[in-house]
Length: 102
Image (cartoon, rainbow, N blue to C red; front, side, top):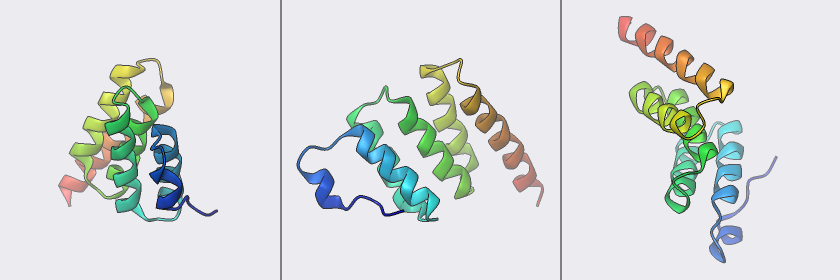
């Protein structure tokens, strides 16, 4: 899987393109870049649920659990019936507790 290059986004930035590239970066283990693109998508469209979700995923994998929780809660505020986001939020809460015990 190849990620979109910055040049593809330069003409007309799109929240969906940033979100998709965030997913690519996440899958490649490039978590800081995944986070940056998730944040870019949110900046363009703050009501974009997937942007907040992708941000939460990147932050959780970076072990920044409090920030991940906030991102997931923002996503759930926009789509409170989303079971995948609710599960991710529950997981990050558990991970946070386990991380603090070590």
